[in-house]
Image (cartoon, rainbow, N blue to C red):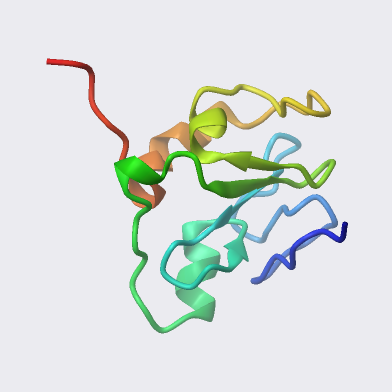
Length: 111
C-alpha cells in the first residue's frame, strides 16, 4: 500500500515541514475539512483557502494521523494517547498535544 500524499512545505520524507522540523516532528494530520494530510495547521492555512474543521468526538476511530517514519495511519484515539508510533516506536513530539484542540474535538472526562 502506498503512503498518502502529505501537502504543504514538507522538508523531508518523514513529514517535517518548514514550521516544525525537530527530530520528533514526524506526524501529519488528515484534516477533516478537506480529507488531505498536512504536517501542521500552518501548512494547511498556507495551502488551502478554507477554515480548519475539527474532527468530532464521535470520529476518534478515524485514521487521521500519519507516522512520517513508517507510514502507519493511526486513529485519532490511538494518537492522542500515544507518545510514539504503535508500529515502529518512533517518538512523537509531546508539544503537539498543545494543538490537539485545533484538529480534534475530544470528549472530556466523565461527569
